[in-house]
Amino acid sequence: MNVSVKSEPYDPPTSVGGSDREATGADAELRARIRRELHAIRPGKLPEQWSDDASFRDDLELDSLDFIEMVARLEQATGVFV
Image (cartoon, rainbow, N blue to C red):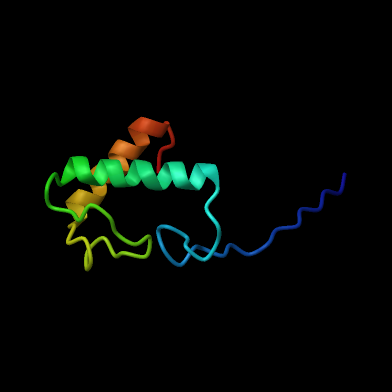
């Protein structure tokens, strides 16, 4: 049996928010979830609003432990493990 699989190269997004494309309902929900989790991790330390292109480290002043905590929270909330 001959099976042919056509795959296209992976083109990763250029930012967390993927602002180069229109947000779908799932995208908007995930962005809102990330914002809620970041506010829970760093209450009172983050701006109320920020750009989807904001850098976790440079713009939001989050460190690597904040990022790891955010990933762990998203894993628990969604059941998708990285």
